Length: 153
Image 1 (tube, rainbow, N blue to C red):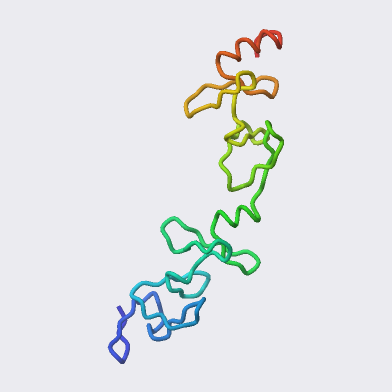
Image 2 (tube, helix red, strand yellow):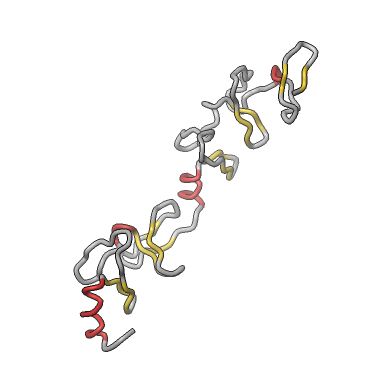
């Protein structure tokens, strides 16, 4: 701990007198016991928020991502700037922030589209599925489909 002339203490790694801390958002002095440091500035916990959805970026597990001068949470960053792909079933885009089932880097499905091509049963965690001629089958329907497509794959 470093001690300043007026008796206030501050952790040595801060290198700033506590009375000089100014919030990067509201520009008011930070007098709170807890504050954040991000993007080279100090912040009140309630002031460091995503510029789009206003979620608090100081929460555990949150990331502060900056693009085009905007502070963004991971979800909004991916929604705006993340890669997308097409669902092999419905041919609609899969947004980067959406949960998806990826069979190969080129073959992916929305979770609601990931179902047997024959009986349309949705797969659950742990269910076996088979990819045949760019179609997904449950175990039962895969055996029938093999005979249609002519042999083992």
